[in-house]
Image 1 (spheres, rainbow, N blue to C red):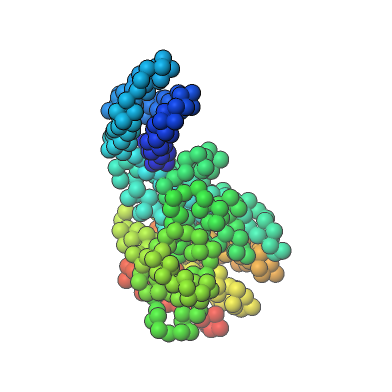
Image 2: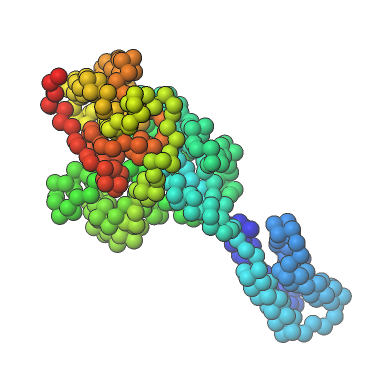
Length: 451
């Protein structure tokens, strides 16, 4: 049985006990008609509870037996009251009270509840931030784990909603998908909802559909849980400048509205607490210290569990990965971040063109796997549209000249696992690479390499 339904039925059982007091009070006052009416309403309520239990369990239960016995008892006293017979009010009240308590206890003990846990990813490439949690939910007895990819929009330069996206068809085949139009959030009222997009309407590049803003989802669940789709490079929490540079990660709507926030470490928890308290006031510190938990990131958990020989590589990638004699090349994972793009927009494309020319020169021994941030295209179109044509031309040139692998698939973990070295901008990929002891080199957009 769904936990919400069981809770409603238990509340109905408690109301039967209160109604018994009303019947007893009416009989004491000699208000027979009122007492008979209360009895009829109690029978109807008990019948309704029994019907719900029968339909949900599909079998005969002790709970149903107790409800049936309660109705028979009510019937007997009702007929006595209507016939003008003398009633033993103490016996009457005690008998109904015992039955009400029996119904409540049997329902509470006998009817097993099923937890409804809903996961609301928006980009398939970010599913790794929720996947291990989903897998644990699937393996947990009496738990229904539902994955519902949610739609999102790119934002136009003026902030209005632009291109519509839905990536439900891009998730791994082993993940059963439910369409967002086919799930009744109000009726189901899941026990827990997990999200990984924290921004609501505060992101200048994209926005999930407004129904799925954290402030709205909160009303449809007992517990809204936010897990960031990214990880943050660990740092000295006592370094004030470093803390200030990272506080924007925490000062987002989901941290305000979620009932629980799960981040990668105790250090990052402190970052979140200090940053959000700075925004909301010192009086909220205890609340956020309780809500935010530094128990670990599913992204790190997943990447540590993978091995190179377990991932499937597209056939068209193989000529880039292997030499003619079959030996494997050194694979460099090259990544661009949104932050660097916006800060260095005047010279980042020149840097990228320079990097690609160098890798093209050494491609017989070294393979470059270029994986731009999945939102980099939307970011350019929305925030630096003057770069869009040049960026597209750079992508096409990279592909046409067969410089290396261009990876815009949803599988981030594969790109990391098959690579040997990371090179590129500071980003959450750096933290993931370091988690598996991969060497990391950070590029300097101001430095161009000679041929």
